[in-house]
Structure formats: C-alpha cells, structure tokens
Image: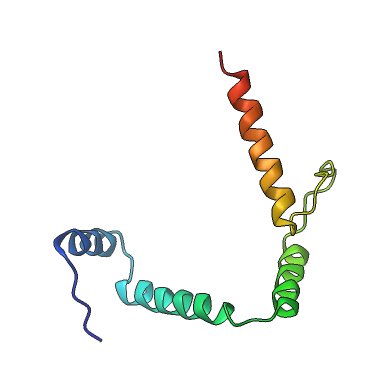
Length: 94
C-alpha cells in the first residue's frame, strides 16, 4: 500500500517514528477502526445493546458511586443532564 501524505502529515509521521511508534501499526489500527465503524452501522439494535452490556460488565461503576438519576443508554436523558449541567455552571460564573 502506498499512501501519499502532505507536508504536515509527513512531519507528524516523522515525529511519531522518532518517538518509537511503528507507522505501519498506526495504519493497521486505523484500517481496523474504520472497518469496525462502518460495520457497526449495519448492526441490529439487539447486537448494539449486547455490546453495551458487555462494556458495562467489563467496566462497572466504582463501588459507592451515587446513582445518576438517569439511564446512560437513554440519549434524551443524557442530553438533558449535560445541558442542565452546562446551564448551571454558566449561571454560577461571576
């Protein structure tokens, strides 16, 4: 595979190589990530729910964490929470 880079990208690749990063590994990971991103678009809601359950099982909330008061899987509830927090922080500014 031959990839053409502009000057800025070439400089970044050079810096990464100097830091010990294998550029070929970066390319492999980028290809895998893009492939997965596109494949995920075709997953069923049940498959996506199963993926999230697996993530929540692998990375549970810490012990003693107070309940959130909303479901992280509910987009609308998460959005409302974030907007509310942002508004409350703006109101507290002097």
